[in-house]
Length: 384
Image (cartoon, rainbow, N blue to C red; front, side):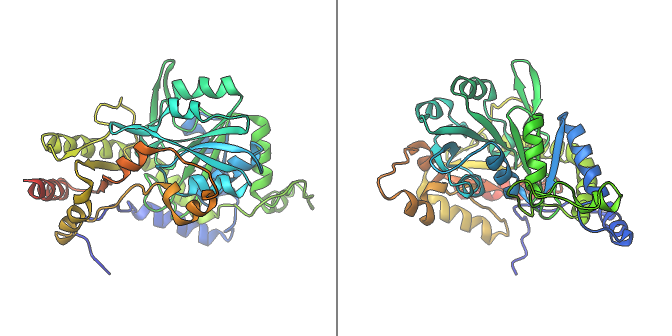
């Protein structure tokens, strides 16, 4: 096992998390129950939404969102290609297919609204918006486009818990601006439960469908029956076992308390790293002029020369610095190539060019200034 001097990401855990999980284990109730309900209520209050449903992981959140808005075979969903594959996979689960949208440019790696508009057809049913790296997408342009064409908006907020979009009406939190918001609590996220996710909405009809589909299409849950609210149940829809367990819900409650401070620390580290890299001609830092409000999940850089990427990453690795690529474009993966090889043409040239130069540098709340300076010094030395 490689022990990195500066890992790409790290988990912030302490005695509070250990105590919270221990209390659940001692309670004897381990599946979805009172802690899950408390976690949902607290998360909904944090975002200011009416409904929140804890689920097994972020991919389950996305799948439920796609399912309840009515996607099916023959439908199309606009989706960025510069994202983790789960965004597009969730669309495929319903029988619909993602139509990949280009990025804005090297300064902003979010979905380009003009390209999205050009790719809307009679089969388009929704826009899946990914707030890349924790930087909110241009919702003031996306929302009118969706309304014009009668499209649902699904926000993939895996990178963006607590991120605030500076809208024309004032700040709005990621996940609250579309029809459904989806969050991931995977181990490298801004708040983590190991695995886990959340689906949020203000739409009463969608909330009922999410609640039912999350647990086998059942009308009541084990926790309801334990409390005497019912002695049996019906199955009224196709459903899934996407429930969250009590241990993860307990972790989520503690991690939610850490989120704002963690995001603030990420912001400070991002600003410090930007300042020390800004004079290097051989690389560019995206989102440098983005409005305040990012959750700063990732610190991406763009090399001037894509041919140097592997060598640059290897040079940092030799000094104990872990880097990564967020992301290889989804449409270039073998499976997706095989899906569309019968004439379907993905035109996202800017995504492909930018992705060839992308490198992700370490960023997490417990990253020390000494570690940050190590990353900066190694980067500067490489391009000197």
